[in-house]
Length: 244
Image 1 (cartoon, one colour):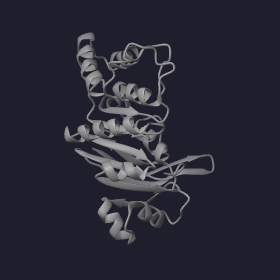
Image 2 (tube, rainbow, N blue to C red):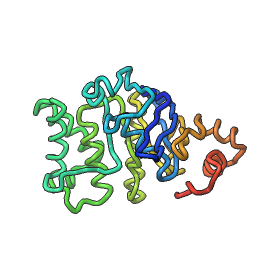
Image 3 (cartoon, rainbow, N blue to C red):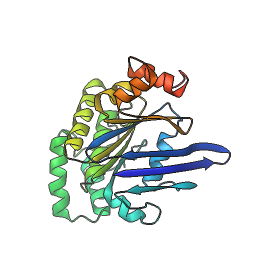
């Protein structure tokens, strides 16, 4: 479970995140929905210890990332906005390297890797260098790398960007499986179809602040809209975020 309370982050005079609070439960997919530049990525980066908040509190499974960053990293699987693969390594070597960083022994890595290759359908490219990979292949490697240590909490920053229809369907199926396993999944996106298909709860962020949160039905009722797309526009008070 993730709890964020009154998070604030500024870059110079620019307020990127302003008093953001939300809760992501185990066994659910929580969507951070908002236009580009809304503060979604900054919020996630604070949760996985890449950035320090200027103020506010946060916990991952009851652990404060600022006080125990290594303990939080062990519990988190992170698929960042920049996939960050090592292009000279094969997909298998990329994933294995992260397993070693998490302190897993070779046998544990091999067992876990074989399961991820099967689930993510990576057999055709697992031993190829990642340079030249398609977006779908890169996302699969990034997910396998994030999941190699079997984390209970998973953060994904716009993972479907650039994916074709079949890769998007496969990604959604995998995220639904993580939910069935009781994991806490936080998904940052600006794609309405993704939110409607996946998210149990939705946190709408606009201009660094929480504009609304709740289930899809609650947001529809709150906005008086008939679709999530229309609800989103009404709740953020603008049509500037309607990107997909």
